[in-house]
Length: 288
Ligand SMILES: Cc1cc2nc3c(=O)[nH]c(=O)nc-3n(C[C@H](O)[C@H](O)[C@H](O)COP(=O)(O)OP(=O)(O)OC[C@H]3O[C@@H](n4cnc5c(N)ncnc54)[C@H](O)[C@@H]3O)c2cc1C
Image (cartoon, rainbow, N blue to C red; front, side):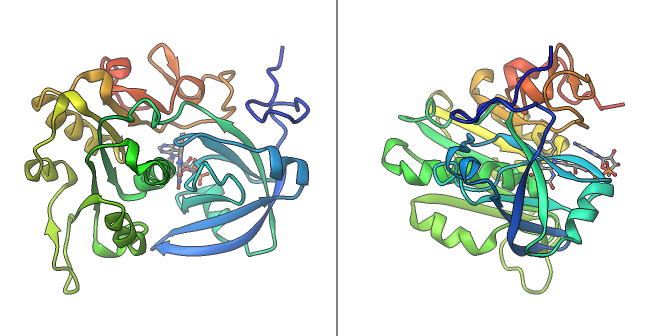
């Protein structure tokens, strides 16, 4: 039996494979090859009922071209309009990069597991991102900022290949103003850069985290997350408080097709957010 469209309470259960139309109302260039798309559902019922949780993703569809999994990058407590930050990688994402304001895109979702921002309340939080990995973390950052008094020390470790590749740099100052310690690094500096140079996991050497009261959320290239986990484990973080968001080639997003199988799990319905304890045996095993 075909499962029904998930988690959009208050709307009639639709065919799980049927996208609904959303209009692009704004396109914001972020970094070379990366832009943020503001999407507004055309159907007012979807506009008012659609909800998602930080870390979840939608499948974005272009007729005749295909579908891609893209995380929400906006504030989950202001679910419309939706923001998706997209890197032009291949067939579908390149076609999306040619769309203009006013054009429509198919959306189905939300799908997947989420960053447990509520469970992290009462303790410290470390966000670790590399490159476009900051996009799926942004809704969790928005949530922590909305409920800032419920958290202890909040630290962000942000990295990118070059200064031009940093995502959302215009927001870092406002995050600092919400008492978030920002440590930013780039792999390769240019003449404009006066900050840190080096890979993201090295930023751990500037921290003194308390592993027993800290939850860590990480998203970025898998090689980066492997070293992040290594540094965190070396500081005795419990494996079940280290969260990683993983990417695999995805097709149906509802646990049917098996494209995104990850050990015994399906990334689309059991992930993309996992604890390290859940994925340890398979972490670092490449897709084939
Ligand atoms: C849960 C999830 C959330 C994601 N969130 C975002 C996001 O917020 N922003 C964003 O820009 N991208 C995100 N991605 C990645 C995005 O789905 C892929 O870049 C996209 O599917 C590429 O499709 P394409 O048709 O443009 O490229 P293709 O022509 O299909 O592929 C281009 C190249 O990328 C590889 N590739 C395709 N899909 C993936 C993948 N999922 N992981 C690794 N390599 C892949 C292909 O093997 C090929 O080498 C996410 C992926 C997942 C699984």
